Length: 202
Image (cartoon, rainbow, N blue to C red; front, side, top):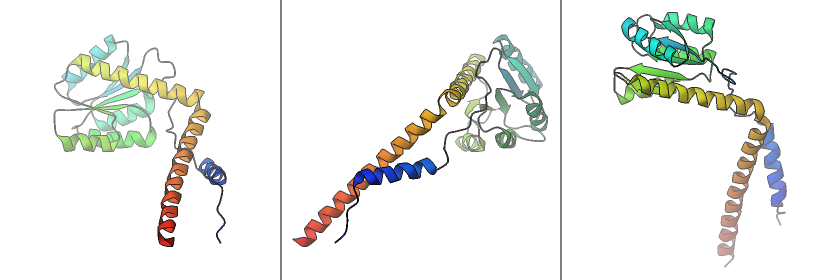
């Protein structure tokens, strides 16, 4: 005779197990809890395009640090600690993919926008896999770039605020949802097993 375990005890055990696991919340750097003038790192080996984009972003009330290749950009990233990175893909010394990977080693949460003249799906996938958050194909409308920058900065601000104001609540909600899901799965398995036993008895 097998002793059945009350479901309340199963849920309690699952809750304790989930609570012991490390939180999966993304760590958000405190970049823009309150941003008056966001700092943008702009990287492109095309000097004319870079200066035009820089001028446009500065008109949008941003501080723009520019670089002509990936190696220079990585050094300026370490020095200036920008709020967002806009990078070309194909550049000398270090391309945009490698720059993106190197930045992700230093900062997991900073928004990165990739610029490219290649409208190829595999190229975009490679950039996203490297850690980019968004992709813009050249030629692009300056207003579109400005809108995407503002959108990514808003997301970063909201995530930073949530991480500071409510990490415990978020973690608790995640654990509760996980427990409910596991209990529901267990209920389904118990029901299937009971049905199987009943069929075998008859």
